[in-house]
Image (cartoon, rainbow, N blue to C red; front, side, top):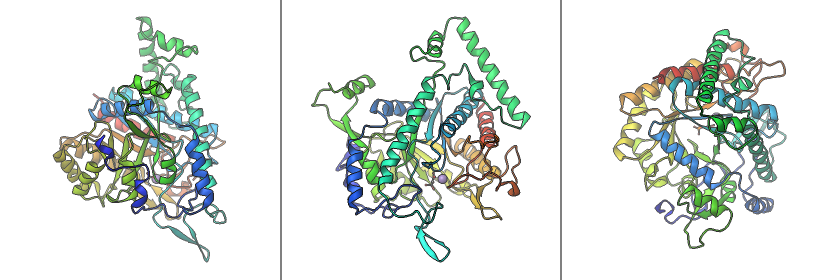
Length: 482
Ligand code: PEP
Ligand code: MN
């Protein structure tokens, strides 16, 4: 594994680390010198992995299919999770929306969809400014209770347990029929008010039910039937799902990174997990807190601590690519994190902004093509398009989001490349009366500036609501329709 040349689990500690010296995030506080933190991290090191190497390898394999245009990648969820929002309603609404979105893509584009949620660990956030002024006080940045911002390393442990409970519930949902394609109505959109959107979705679910009924009649799909009855794992009715977060808090990521024998195949990986692997097999490191981790646009310095940490792990990784990235810098970054040019390893998540995508994307594509680095290209049309409403709320305009996304699809095809997926901040959350959140402007529901304040619930970046997300899904699915 030349990817790990001169790398150790703690080699990042000798590099300059952006964004982690203070505490920068909603609920996790870092105080790098505290003895409590040392105790907390030792405890985390002994706790079991959240995900397994064989799951991570499976995702890498599926991402290599995405890279070959045989599947589409959907990366989506909240900008940031919070401990308070870790409820059964929120988790099932999020999974339901991811499933509905992917169903529209599968049906329209006739392509499998690889689903990676920003979930079960997306607690840490970078901040543009380390401090902010509240009244006459200068406090560490974050839009939560200004009286509750003292560093508290115990929150790292809470993050571990909230991730565990979230993931446990997701696994439960996915193995008990919630995601079964035989019951898409269970996770459909009874609350959606737009008749056109509802009709369109219902047309798809009816088509799907017919198709599944037909395969059953001609003798396929028995596995799915037994799966529905609580039997073994099925095929048609089964949905795979992976977790991700930004790899920001390197102390936490290090504590969750464990050594395992190198997998010669998935079968040998599972053997190694029950402890009878050949002890002479070389070892590799997996971050076991999520299947997929990404480097943020503020922490991707070539000589920085985050890049150093990321180059040593076997997980598939994402890199946010914004307008400040020079084309040659991007190629040098790929040389560092993927020196062996392995398939399915690196996903480039471009986020320029609708006004800048024309200037930057083609140059980045050309540089990567010339370098012959294998990459997956996905578009994050959210992070370059944030604005402040006249009422002072952080928002995004649906039209601008679509404009960056469609420009990406077009520029890739003009450059002989292909857009392999999308990265979105969205939520299926509904309030008690069954209404969606109101954080982004526009979409088929025509959300106006005056309506933004009605149900603005995000405590970080503004998210597309259920209806706006399905609008995006239909748009992508129409683009890729064969
Ligand atoms: C994010 O994905 O929430 C984020 C902060 O993105 P970026 O690093 O691209 O700004
Ligand atoms: Mn965000």
